[in-house]
Every structure is written in C-alpha cells, then in structure tokens.
Length: 273
Ligand code: 2YJ
Image 1 (cartoon, rainbow, N blue to C red):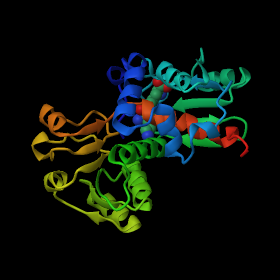
Image 2 (cartoon, rainbow, N blue to C red; image 1 turned 135 degrees about the vertical axis):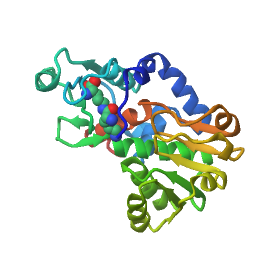
Image 3 (spheres, protein in one colour; image 1 turned 180 degrees about the vertical axis):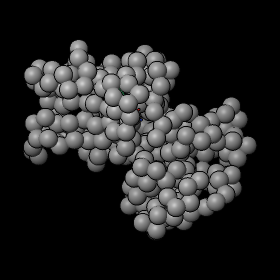
C-alpha cells in the first residue's frame, strides 16, 4: 500500500481552499456536499455543530508523517467541526483524546486509517471513504454514471470498493491490474470485464477511475477524458494533463472528509421533520 510522505502532506493545509474550489468547478459539489453525497445524504441531514474531534499521531511502523495529523484536523475544521491534535501519540494520545471528550477520534498507522465515533464505537475507514468520495466526484464530473463505460485501474482495496459502488450505480466496468489474480477475483465478484491492455483501455475510455500508483502515459489519454484519481503519487505527465478534460486528485482531503462525515452520521443524523 502506498504511504503518504512528508513531501505529499506538507502543503495540504494551505491548499484546502483551492482543493475545495477545484471540486466545485469539476464536480459541482464542494467538499462537504461531496462527502455527504458519497454516503448518500445531503449536508442538511447532518448536525455537525460542536462535534469535538481528536487526531492522535501514531508512531508505530514507519512513524509520524510530518503535518499529517494537523492536516486531518484542518480538513475536519473546514467541514465545521472542532478539531485538535493530541499532545501525546499512541495509547497515551488516545487516552488524552478520550479524556478531553472527543466525540470522534482519527488515527492512522501504515495499514489502516480510521475515525472512531466514541459515542457508539462505530468507525469509518479511509479505503471505503476514499473510494466512495472519488466515485461521487466522478459521478458529479460526468453528470451521472448509469449506463456509462468506466475503466478502473487497480483492483486493490480502493479500486475494488469503487468498482463495486459504480457497478451498483449501473456503470459498465472494465478492470485493469498488473496482479491478474486480483483482477480476476474482482471481475468475477462484480461481473465486470477485465483487460490486459492498459494503453488500449485508457485510449478507449473517457471515464477512468485510477486507484493505482502507476504512471499513466499521456500519449494513451483520449482528449476529453475525466479521471477520478485517488492513486498516490499523482500519475499524470504534461501530455496527459493537457489532453484530459478533468483530473480529480488530492492526497488526503476527499478521503478524510468522507471519513469525518460518515463517522458523524453514525450519531448526528437529524430527525426527519
Ligand atoms: O500518525 C502519523 O503521522 C502516521 N502514523 C500516519 C500514517 C498514515 N498512513 C498511511 O498513509 C497509510 N498508507 C494508511 C492509509 C490507509 C489508506 N487507505
């Protein structure tokens, strides 16, 4: 699994407003609207006021990513919640967040990134949230996915969940992965096509969900293609950027925003009027 680096995270806090503007112009939804759409609600259904969110740095594995916790806290603040990063890391930090009354707690090691709703123990996870957020982004950018052909690059966790969500929306999915077993397992599971020819598949699709860290050769890109691209690092060269109509990509914001909104929805959905 690709791990974020200090370099990828260093500018997130300063670029949250421009990511939000990018989402509005490419998908027609701002970050909060997109995160809600990803879990099938609208912002008016959620009461985010006064939610106290703790972000706990985790030192296990490869350790702390500089500004990771502060970036998550800022993403959550932009959605209208109150967020703090604990002074201590790991178990001591978790105890600190709980004793400060955090209603939601974010923690990430090298394998999982979760947000726990402390009022009921339910939790959201980054793989599902990233997949759902980028599916909503592609749906918004393309004006709907029902009946449309979508290429999914990468049959890992995010690609697999995204492919399943889009198949449920009525999209016709083609899957590519260099891991042929993973590709076959996913294509059998959701009854989708698969391909061995990445270049050919890219050049014959205008809707692409890219959940892979691999580089995409701009010479393969069809003019007017819409890419929803959670894969890190950013996969595109200058030619691809010029030929694509839209590329939706950010290193952390969309996935973390969906996590926060889903985690809040576990206890903060407003009663229907
Ligand atoms: O607290 C910290 O600063 C670090 N322990 C954060 C580690 C962040 N983890 C990752 O980037 C992993 N790739 C897990 C993300 C799950 C993606 N679905």
